[in-house]
Length: 301
Image (cartoon, rainbow, N blue to C red; front, top):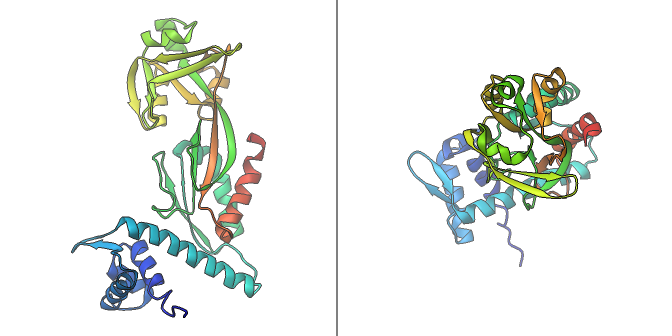
């Protein structure tokens, strides 16, 4: 016999999680807080598990609740997509597209993408997080996350490469004048190095020469930071050496403000990916944004 209550409470549950509480969810759904609370209680009773841990000030998903929430969001998205397909309506992006991207890359490479997207789809809005921190796409509620990495972790997400850049080791002319030009990566242990702390082994820099020999260097870490822009500013002031994606420093390399070190070594490559949840049917807002993103950065893949 079919379970006629299979979907009861799902939309209320999703709204509670998205809104961060019963009161806020009640406002969004047009119900009272007591109604929302009862719906969640009935849903938990039917499932036989606790979905939310509640305090007087906040709620938090239990491990079972987190799994169920992800499935419910997918279910709602699929249902909305199915309705649109059945009615054969013209689908254009509407509502908020929540995106996270690295600060520098977003500033210099994605401004035109965002402009095109907003100009082309007037009913669309952006919720933009400019950050280098690690993001859980699903748990944090993002539609799409852009991240730069030399090695992509295994993931259930769809990963689309949108940009590639070599990783350069550079210093200012003033620093090299004061402390001498480096001939081999092993000399980095005697110099002041600026490390990107979001990496697992941020103070170990690897190099490979033209015949394939590899060198790993435990660099002298003078500064570690999760903000590349600040580290680069200090390096520009003659305080040390940094290892950094070329897209950060293209103009400074061209002008000669920064000097490329170890150019006889094969530079490692950094790839920039668009990550988004695996779905049979992409929402219009994600699909259209990716299309614009792809066309804008296609020559840099």
